[in-house]
Length: 55
Image (cartoon, rainbow, N blue to C red; front, side, top):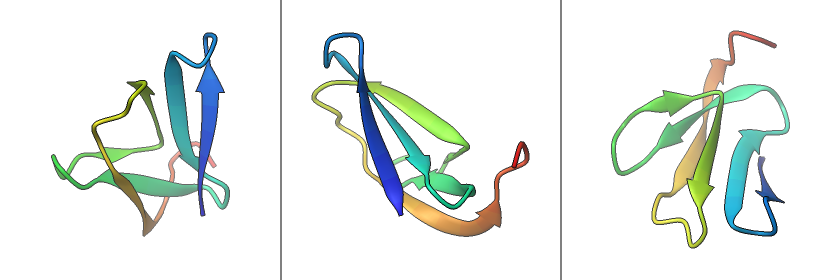
């Protein structure tokens, strides 16, 4: 499942997998271990079947 964590007085949002999987940014096709975006976030993510390298 993708977790959203708000940072910097809710100005940023961090997305990451609670099971250590890579995230796919749907709009660009780029893979991330975790992604930080400005709120409101214009990107969407989905969890992949690929294990993140640092886990």
